[in-house]
Length: 304
Ligand code: PLP
Ligand code: CA
Image (cartoon, rainbow, N blue to C red; front, side, top):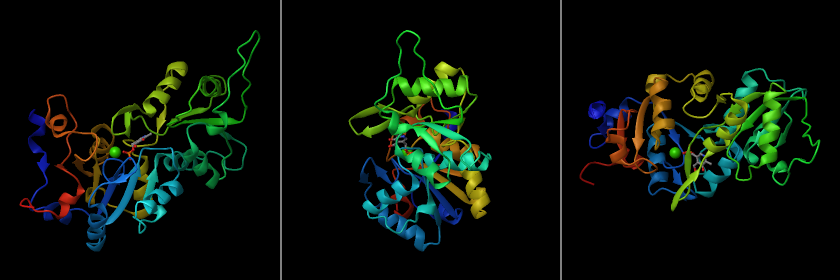
């Protein structure tokens, strides 16, 4: 299609991109690793970028781990030089959002979680009490005659993240907190499907968020990609210049959109969920500045 005419496939020479970028923001799954396996060549490429003076951040929409949990994952993959402060998970983003929106941290308000351990770990670090999450995975509400589910009146926000043990109790608890208690509805991310295994696509957090949208009629506040929250945070904390940042990801509707909507340069890599056919096909409307097979292309020449 016509809008694809300007997508440049990275090949020799790449120096133009490297010269024009001071900061790389890397998506994680599909760029750095796939599932639990590091993508070939990544340690060497990151080392070369670091040696070239590039600043790097790692941003994942997967909320199941906290920033500390991801630091362990990077360490386990041998990427030990990456500090926790350069890692941004959507679980961290949710906590940062509450902190910045003046959600009380004196314990007077609580958060109800649909999600795994990552969100609660991040809230612990900023002193926001929470309930739900793994603690409610075995529960069922009393649906007998006169049965009611009583919810904590101090819940001021519901955070909905990926939860492999989502159940009717959690959905009803969240519904009451939002519809009756007026709690804010926050989504870590809206990824429709994810690649938990290489064998097939798996229902992503879009399904958990969809359940809560369905029973509340409300739209959530999104904190993960493509929301601008993380780039605003990086800008205020590190003073980065947006047009000198390149967002690198494998997904068009989260990563590339995060780049194009926020004034960043963008590079789509084909090492994850998006094929060249899909990128260049007639149904795609999201256009990165560049694309490449993977990030090792930064330091490869066409003949290699
Ligand atoms: N959410 C879940 C549950 C995932 O498993 C994944 C990828 O593994 C993602 C989101 C997307 O993560 P990323 O933004 O790092 O591609
Ligand atoms: Ca990805």
